[in-house]
Image (cartoon, rainbow, N blue to C red):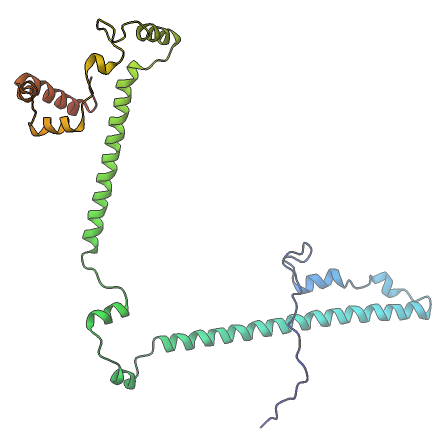
Length: 253
């Protein structure tokens, strides 16, 4: 049995040799980087004899620095690759262990000691409750959405048609504005004599909610108002106007 080594201290995490944002190192391999970072001397420089001992010493030191840089970078890369490989192996092992525990069958002691759970609760705990009528409900919802979209489109078309009908009385020119001012600002604006101070005095009070409910329920107090809704001409005209609006697809004057 091999005795474990007593390692003193802890090695630091290998640094990134090639920075991702580096403009000169991006996309380069280690050998290509060393070609520029530790360039070997030229052939003429190697063939020439050193002029003195100091020049020869400088050449030896330069070669030593190149060798140290080369060995250091290769060692850093080797350590980084080993660390990444170990992390990947550990991650795969943990994932496999997790999947095995997740998909493992229930133990016999847990099955025998587990409390009684109703079937409905077990289905909810196991996952979503099956819905055999899901396709039918989805189809009904689609039809409902299409019907609502069609109603909105028809309402918008009806609103545009109503706006078009009302646009005939809009004031868009200065001549129309002057004519409207001359027509309204007169001594007798309501067309009745003698001049009345307000439209209510000329044509009576506006219709209230109570009077409209009485007309719908046919409970008017006056005989004239009670029999007005029963006249065939009045009802026929109102119904014909409603039919014409449905056929033409818009409001009518």
